[in-house]
Length: 126
Image (cartoon, rainbow, N blue to C red; front, top):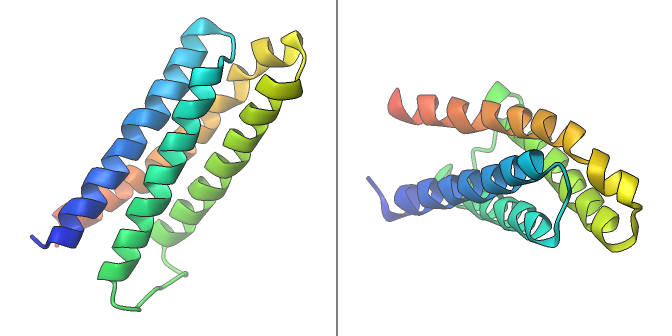
């Protein structure tokens, strides 16, 4: 296994850890806190880094038309919007917005899990 493969796997798994921590901690608290937002951003940054490392392994053969790439891109964009929205809610949002924020987080997390586990399955089948 190449160093780049290990690095990308570790980065994507760190994305899973931090994003899941932020999602579930916020869900159980039913109130968006600053540290939840930090966890969302860390998860996003690790995911982007891991995705870039995987892109480097692809040797330029970046196929946007496969399901893994499409779901991965969708998940990254949703994570970005989610993190920006969370940042806004914590900085300028109302208490009602902070309390109701958790309703949408799980949906984004579930979408994110699709390319995570899909990539894992693809990697194991090679």
